[in-house]
Image (cartoon, rainbow, N blue to C red; front, side, top):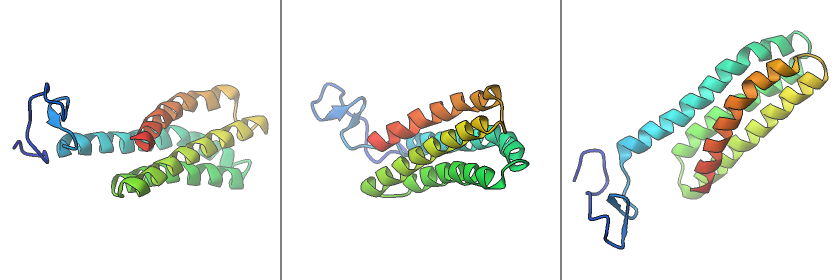
Length: 141
């Protein structure tokens, strides 16, 4: 058995295998790196949105607070999902995805109110959508 795995490598031609490992086998190190990567991506999005939160705060504290909370919930629910059992993990990842939708809506509302330009809001939507794709994948596994 290799270090960091819950089972050994097997013949990929065998019917009970997926890739190089038995069905249900987990490479714990690779899983931990993937988990950290998604969480890092969520924190990166927060860093990208932070200047916009500060801009919105000058005009509408409540709306900025909602954006701050929504993006914090994304990162926290992703982290919690990695520590939860399968059913609860899915709920956490779905909550993270919902919070991303909320954050996008806040950016659109802030733009509609004239607190942000469409260009400013658009600059953070791409990394938010990329994160959303990964979180969606987590919720579906």
